[in-house]
Length: 284
Image 1 (cartoon, rainbow, N blue to C red):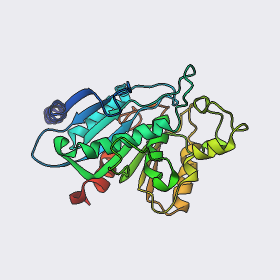
Image 2 (spheres, rainbow, N blue to C red):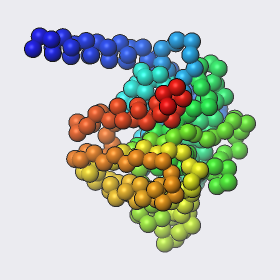
Image 3 (spheres, helix red, strand yellow):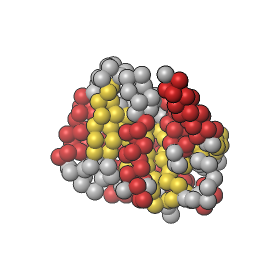
């Protein structure tokens, strides 16, 4: 019994030390000067090595959410403690008082974050050839869009950092909607599906999938009352149809908006193994 208690204490101490090693830079500018949205950086301990990067995209129905909510902090600290340069971003949200729609600027912002990481690779000790993306709910949708839309889709921003690539090596989609074309009307799009079917098609993941897309890890709970788990099952089937490497992890009893440590299951080993496989060449 005493040995078990000692072992638990040692493991807890190791985890705390790993978390303490994470360096956080708050409110970093990554968009043009006139934009108010910022990013938080979660940086691993300095060890003279280059580390892969991960962009973290918050949820909130494309209308709300913040870069430093509980889920995003959990993801950023977890990944940075295991050797990842993480960038959690705020991005353009829907504002009913603004004449400017949030789409596709929200996707442009997410892609600009990938470019910003590459442009700042030397300062961040970043391995710019290995960058992934993770997001939850609406952030899962945008993370997936970053992964599957290249220049041919016409959704890459012209700038800033236009000389840098928006490409990522892998995607973790946490309970994001996939088949927007047949999903429901989205207030952030300002029009109904009946009014603008082409807009909803442009906003749907299924429009862009092809065999060149990066690997996916999809996480979804069976008790999700915001985005039905069927959305991830549809994406799972579509990825399989196109021969895209992927894994769907369904978490029994998990609700919407869980982070990497929901009470139903510790997802950290699964997510870290996925990122290690695709972003750390030595781990392959």
